[in-house]
Image (cartoon, rainbow, N blue to C red; front, side):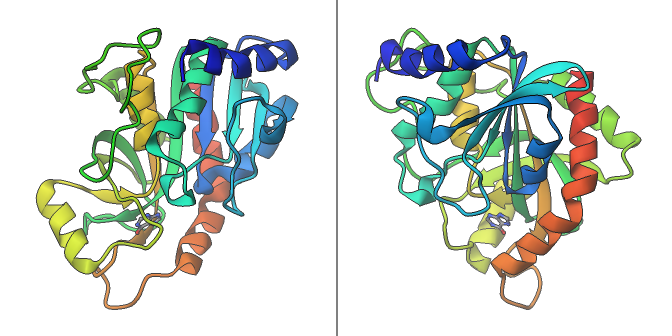
Length: 271
Ligand code: HPA
């Protein structure tokens, strides 16, 4: 996939978009309802976009929404793509490269995650300071797309401290417990084993999840600053003496939808 592949999606969207967006937001399962609060929305179904991907997860809508949030021009991905759905890492570069071509200056990624750090609680918010991805390939594997970035990109400043500081500051007045921590990627779709979670803790992870890092790496490659934020939906496997369930995750997602949306609006307005 070279520049022209991504340009085809971007050209289609530019013809439909009401403006050049400043910020791209990826709404994880924790932030679905946020999409409904975007003002002056122009909604485009993923199925209409040439060379794009399709969401297969029921909680992910599969729509791109252009609109404003407190006066900021945003483009929102309501529905993201995961490795566990069957996409290859190499395909997962598509959304961020299209966002880059649309002209955004920053990306906000959100997700639901399990707490490895035993001081965390479901309902806490974690700003991702760094990530660990030891499994699988890189989204940048294969011929380098030199129009976007270098063969061997630095990823040590993927999550710039200036953006994290803004998100932390907004946390102070949000009524939420907002922390900063390390996110570890697991490919899923099964939740992790207790032994994997103990290993993750030893390695320095505070939370685990099945998304986000492919997007972060792709954004870092093309020079887009990333703010990534997790909602802690559950204590990770083995922390509590009971099995994990998707329902437990969904319950926290539902409880946090309102407060997390309000917090994210304040964050978008501040960056
Ligand atoms: N593990 C992986 N992904 C998750 C979890 C978890 O415990 N909770 C929400 N997404």
